[in-house]
Amino acid sequence: MNILLSAFEPFGGDRVNPSLLIARHLDGETIAGARVVAVELPCVFHRALSALDEALARTRPVLAVALGLAAGREGLSIERVAINVDDARIPDNAGAQPVDEPIVPGGPAAWFSTLPIKAMAAELDAAGVPASVSQTAGTFVCNHVFYGLQQRLAGTGVRSGFIHVPLLPEQAARYPGKPVLTLEDQVRGVRLALQVALTHQGEDLRAVGGAVA
Image (cartoon, rainbow, N blue to C red; front, side, top):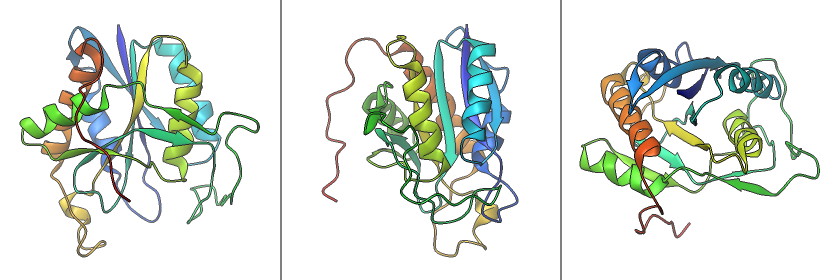
């Protein structure tokens, strides 16, 4: 049994991407009887989905989770929904900057995560790793991959979703005032999140996790 854990290369002028460091740390680990297989995705619209397709076909996962960096998040953000739009504030790593373009023309407006997102957030908080449910994955390549992942696995019974991770302490100088979290805590949090995602039975935890705005 395989857990597919995807992550992105650095982008936007950063020299590192914590999502990729986390994935590399967890690659090959066994969690709840399943082996983590990490894959690096290019931070490029559409090419990222081609790489994801190859990884899905190769690993045939029992669980698929995509990771990405979101500067400004205070902890691990477990995403609820991906929307069918690319609207890039900055160019991707190939220089593309789509504006108001559908990811899949004629596709559903949104796909929801099939992870037990509130149970995951609760377990992380209990373990001392800051975590919350997020209501938006943005409109950059992270949301692009999240939408594509959910579309590809819809109806298969394979749980899948997206987690945004915060900055590392070594990135603080480039992002003054933004919250950071050590790589050790991020790895620990994602490891636990994968465990809960794979083992949680039945309905998700019913607890407040919404937002007013």
